[in-house]
Amino acid sequence: MASPLTPPGVLAYLTGAYAPLAILAYGSYADGSWGPDSDFDALVLTAGGPERHDMSVVGSVQLDAFVYPVSRFDEPFAPSAFPQLADAALLLDTEGRGQTLIDRVRAWRATQPLPTPEELRSQATWCRKMLRRAGRGDTEGLFRWHWVLVDSLEIFCLLAGQPYQGPKKSLRWLAEARPEAYALYSAALARPELPALERWIAHLEGLCASLPQT
Image (tube, rainbow, N blue to C red; front, top):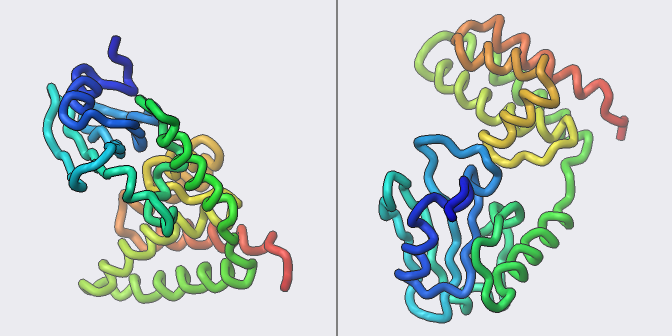
């Protein structure tokens, strides 16, 4: 029986097309945040054959499935190329290779160093500089407006001690864990008005005050 994790027909299509050893789902179908327009993100491990990127539509679901032979993950293997697999869900794993791959990526993620307080302060200073440049109101200023909004979400997560996991998961975390910050960020996104962006950047800078001195 299909579930939100396995839309109708998707598992049957992938197993029939590729005879996989493992199927790892990640993204919105793996974490339950999927919607009507969500792609089905997956990595499919096969015994051999070429690498493929399958973007078929199964039913009403758009696939975004990367198909790899297991040899692709022989040493030397760079887990940094597959960070999304740290939170993947196994739909099929006939030989345990899928779980091994997830474990390797999680082990890599656990060893990644966090930014130092000085690095975080520098990033907050960069946001302030971008705010001033965005205030010009010309085309470059508008570009910098959007640039700082995108990058400042990741910077805020790092300042708050929360790993950045892409916009969808990070925005959900922000709404649930930091509703005040979410309101400020949403306002800056919704209206290209300098005061709204100023309030968001000031809130971000406020987190810097609690950082230890180096």
